[in-house]
Image (cartoon, rainbow, N blue to C red; front, side):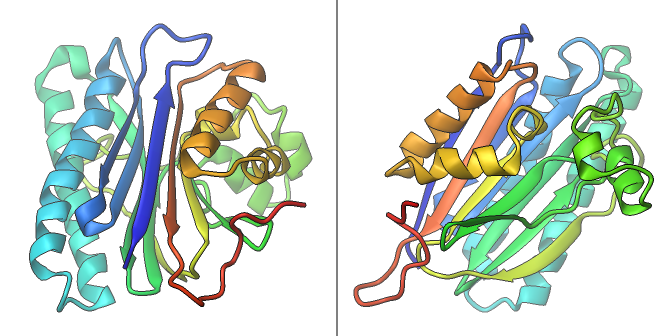
Length: 260
């Protein structure tokens, strides 16, 4: 399989430091994005621990075992790596006063032959762009999403809520964490976007779609998304990972270079 990746991260216009972290391992078709929280610089520590641990440990396992592993095996390996990262962050937070209360959201993906295993914790998101349509393929672990699911508020009202940043699940906050993982079919030309809420809070889905449709490469798309989020206020750190499975000669393409 021939995957193309591009990532970008930016402090934004309101923060002094960047608590987001990104890791991509092209050899094992692995991508990870984390958005840290808690204390002075502690968010940076938590997100960096999560991405570096998962890239190192899961990347090594994938390089050694992925060729013969089943999807169930890969899902189990993802769970174990996230659990180990969670314990490392939790223990660091409880043994170092300056890291007390730190944690991080997480969204990660592993591409397989025609498939993507996508896992997440918290409100960092995954999207798929296919045939000119953008679809969110993760479900936020947040108080706001629970209110929407319960019918207490609408998605439109949620955009103006003061509860935007209250997550109900995070890595490193408790001694255990549950990674929500789903399997998705992948078509040549699909674009997959991982992002922190510094992007999704600044741009609605239609705006993200229009930015991507106006770009001719992953590099251009990543830069344009960061610029658009900053132009909309840049109230938080902004991080994106874009991934695409290149089509083989004669294969159907789901988007690129689709314009509308």
